[in-house]
Image 1 (cartoon, helix red, strand yellow):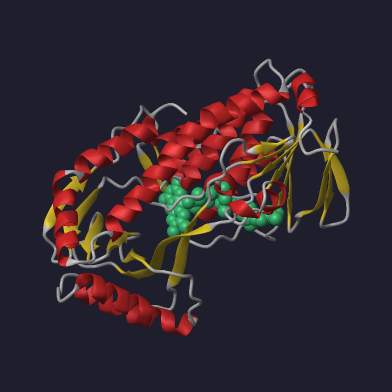
Image 2 (cartoon, rainbow, N blue to C red):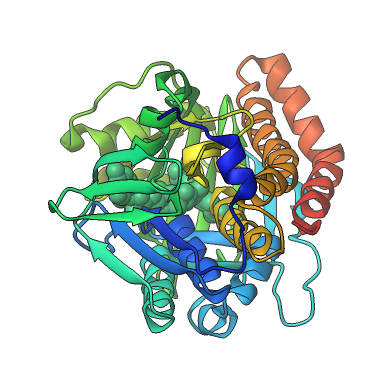
Length: 401
Ligand SMILES: Cc1cc2nc3c(=O)[nH]c(=O)nc-3n(C[C@H](O)[C@H](O)[C@H](O)COP(=O)(O)OP(=O)(O)OC[C@H]3O[C@@H](n4cnc5c(N)ncnc54)[C@H](O)[C@@H]3O)c2cc1C
């Protein structure tokens, strides 16, 4: 059976029968898609390779667009109850000289322009909502084999049992098995050239808002987490993807921070505490871009599986959540399965592409600050042009998806 039987998909009603859909991956995108698809009446099964909802990384932020999608999933109130809304962020140079104040833009009624949440918190409320709507979520399970037939996809699970679906959607993240097998190894992740070093630290005296420090070749972010803790994130260009000994990571992160700060003593008391940290995380950034279309017959991909971006607009999760909501909106319309897939692509591709590109550009602009001339140019940019670049990002994200 060829991967794509367009005539069959053209005849196949997207509505009028109850679609049976398998979502692969119960991450931020997969669970959101499962809720959206169940809300339009589909019968949805979700499989997740991990045994539980544990995830690396403490939190993530959703901007206005992501929060609008969360409202469509019926999760707004719950997220507002456990999330926090930062007021904005301030850029300084490595010596602590003020460069610019940036906002996340206006709220939209009850939908905040940004909400920062615990990842596990979101996964827990999304899991509960999906199950309440009737989704079957199987943890510790993956796809063993997948066969496309004209009328459905036959899936055998790692557990040995099997089932047939009208549609299989891979929300299985940056290293997507579905993408690798159905779209090809040429779309495997590409190193983005940047890395993030992260660790929690005691809250610095007087730090109340998220603070960005532009250094020589990268930046350091300090974000208050609670009344006595903050999070430090350092982003810098690093070639290759070396594997570091975890015992060495506090020292390496400290050295990177000192190199960014030069001879400045600004925030030095906090930076030196990195050496005592027992939870330094190191994340090399990679990107994925799968060009049109994100489907091969009845097998689709969404979220990071289709479009992983460095978190410079803080929007990868929002794009993944939007994907699921838009797919459900198109499947709910009175047209064929192929029409739904085509309209999904027409709506998603330009939007995800714009956010993907802007994320990469922002990262490269930040790293282009190593030489003294480039550093001064970067500071000038942050003073004069970053407020307007930030406004552009706010407007881009706030556009209807
Ligand atoms: C440091 C950092 C900070 C970030 N901050 C933000 C932010 O503030 N805001 C934002 O919007 N985005 C942020 N992002 C991006 C965001 O985390 C991702 O874009 C988002 O998680 C993508 O969601 P997803 O569901 O596509 O993939 P994931 O969340 O990665 O979920 C994929 C799921 O699929 C499962 N899986 C994998 N393979 C299989 C398989 N074969 N079978 C079954 N299950 C499988 C995985 O275990 C996982 O649970 C950040 C990313 C990084 C690296």
